[in-house]
Amino acid sequence: MNPMDYIRKEPYELFINGKRVTPEEKATFQAINPVNNEPFATIYKAGRKETEAAIDAARYAFDKGPWGKMSPRERGDLLLKAAELLQERLEEFAAVETMECGKLYGSAYYYDGAKSVDALKYYAGAARCLKGEVVPIDNDTVNMVQYYPHGVVGEILPWNGPFMMGCQKIGAILAAGNTCVVKPSSWASLTMLMFAELLKEAGFPDGVVNVVTGSGAVVGDILVKSEKVDMVAMTGGTATGKAIIESSKDTVKDIALELGGKSPNIVFDDVNVDEAVKWAKFAFTLNSGEVCVSGTRLILQRGIYEEFLEKLKAECEKAVPGDGFDPDVTLSALIHKEHCDEVWRYIESGKKEGARLICGGEHYTDPKLQKGNFVPITVFADVTPDMTIFQEEIFGPVLCVTPFDTEEEAIEIANGTKYGLAGGVFTKDMKRGLRVAQAIKGGQIYINSYFSKGMVESPGTGWKQSGLGVAGIKKYMISKTIFIDTKDGDVPF
Ligand code: NAD
Image (tube, rainbow, N blue to C red; front, top):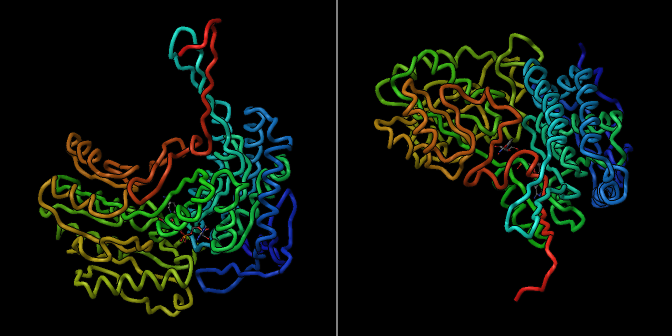
């Protein structure tokens, strides 16, 4: 396979109202391969005019088009067709994702790809399982609670896993009956443009899914502030989430935010150390640490502290960095030079603040790796809660290890940041495992594994500053309660 065969030579247009659209100003940006920092595709950048055209298209499709008249079963059938088409073209999507994000191809195909298809199938079924409630408030009244689509949803995506997250979110948006304007990250826009065209091929009416590429400051901001957009959902950093809370306030629209994390992974000293070491490494190095739920703070009981660190170092040093298309490579490049520089700044801050460097922390010297955004797996031990690397999300393959003695101390350390996204507990004592899992402030906790079990049917909500709003299909729906009086009689009071 030559991945460049999947890339168009001409610039990628926006996708609005079922058509490719060239923006009036013809401004462009580049898709850049993180492995060598070479541009490999050109993408048009939307301005206000195109963003508003996309919103109008989604508005029309929701208010007046055939979409609003379709039954949940019909919407589900279209999603199933999309899943089938995506399965046929998975190699293409996974190759483009690998080139754009620097991912391992195997992971882009078998993990992100498989989960994308699965999400579309799941939401096809979920559309048909939508239900309301009847509340028995008194004997003379039938009180129905119904769930409606919001209308037009602005979906703003991040760059890590853009293809999988896009499919999961668009699947839920459509199953619920909304239309949408999708704004992918400028560092990873191609797969969503491809996906919008695939949805048209699957039979989705024009205007139901529009993709507008460009900056958060222009496209994202217009979506958030527009009175014609009923809801905005954003997955990204906590700082961006706070900016959206601020800029959405004049329209009082519904917002849902899936934000950053700094998740704790607590390991007690009764574990099988060799096995727990492998999980601990997996937890913070998957996708080179560019995963929101990464277990980036290892909270390690003192009895096994040095033995664990030694074994973890040996495990981390096995990583093979390189091009994600090479099947021998196990450590991918980070998405962008700017982000890579930021990760290096955190590594320097860890050294300056006095954390003990166990492995990594120095630039690769291999000439083959000099052009790409490579960071070796880096482990800092003796990290204390006052250090920047303990508190802030780094979003790279960097682990902070902190020792503890008692269960209470472990929980206090675990809950000691502003984030509350995920967490892990490793112990043979299941009573303790459950107790600790319940005490960790976070929306997704794993006992004796990490992350690999997460499926689209299990909601993961962000606690504290890791998010706002519920997960899954209900996120994209709004309730209405209707009271029917069954008795003739006087008006009370
Ligand atoms: P980001 O916050 O920089 O950008 C996210 C999106 O918001 C992008 O499309 C960006 O263009 C847009 N944006 C930026 N400013 C905006 C504004 N003022 N108004 C509207 N839109 C704006 O995040 P990122 O760097 O792309 O992604 C990494 C972050 O995403 C990490 O913090 C990670 O933890 C988080 N994330 C969270 C989850 C989750 O489920 N909680 C999942 C994946 C990623």
